[in-house]
Length: 500
Image (cartoon, rainbow, N blue to C red; front, side):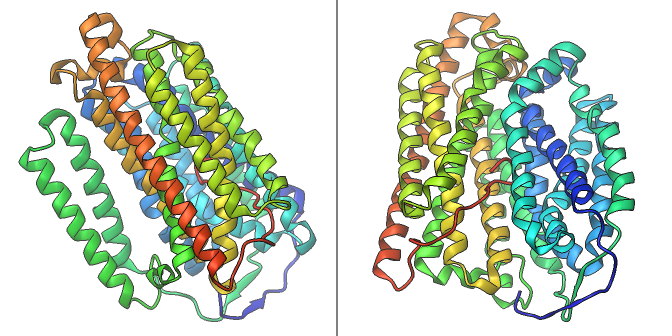
């Protein structure tokens, strides 16, 4: 931020302890998000839930955490980061315990939303705490370990979730968070004992903007999801989407006038920066859904167990993690915007292959998943690198938060849409069988209809990947023609809140 900061004299806690506490909490928060998709069919069967309920079980945590991500960071600025962070850990732990004991599906969804409040608070304040409390010469190392904890959680999530559900049941997806959360809260009270900096001018919390983001995004997700049971042309679906669009339009008007906006919309006046952000948004829509889709596919169509389904999907996040590390090294030799474009195109090719070969056996799927993971791993960190290098130095924190929020909005929205497309060819009465992982047991006709839905959904993801590649190309072109260049941009340590 542009305002000066005044140091508060205090003893610094042990850097190792600070890093251990923050990284451990972040790891389990990220793991809880990545393991849920494997457990969904088991949860649906347990509660005999319908298709709409299953969609909310999947999307509620991400929709709420995405909507609150920037505002919980701002609350940390206002109320004190240590206090807000510990409150987030407490909310996450308590809600996880309650969710693991939930007796009904609607209560589980409500508790997932509460858990997401804690997740958003932890994500929004973790990196800032490390910047505050680590010595200057340890910050880069600390951030690298912090990002690695997120990446490792993403890598092991599908297989770990499958093993956990197979061995102990779906409730352990939530209950495992409890002892770790209690430990992180107790250690955090002792270790995170000082606020290193206090800004001279504290920004105000944009309550109207935050309310409009939450209701607009939430309304959009609910309206799209209703299409599964009511049809796309139902008055509730059309009216809900129109109302959500109106709320988001009002949000834009308010944010343009706000002194401390949730998102500084003026940043989009920089064409190369806005195109890089748009590319990240489109590619998040295209690249982040296949793991969830394929985990559900292997259980619903192939009849695999949660463990086998998780293992089959694991090559995608593994290749993504390996490629992300390699991309960081390559960005010192190749322009990051060129690498971002290459990664986007590789993932696009993988999506096209998956659409063409999804019904031709796991080996063909494996090649496609590996290409999607490889391309996504290259694109993620290099696109973040491009965005952060082009951002004005005084606004890097705000723009990084905006980047993360846009990408998560893209993932939540595209997931709601593709789940609706996948189940659209099925009769309404059997759509819940897909989420329960038992569609293949109904009839061959149902399995065939589901295959049509999958092909249509993956073709949509490929189209979004094409948009991401084109905007990446345009961003690179405008950057070359302008005064700024990403040629000397440093390597980026990581990307997604959900994993990169």
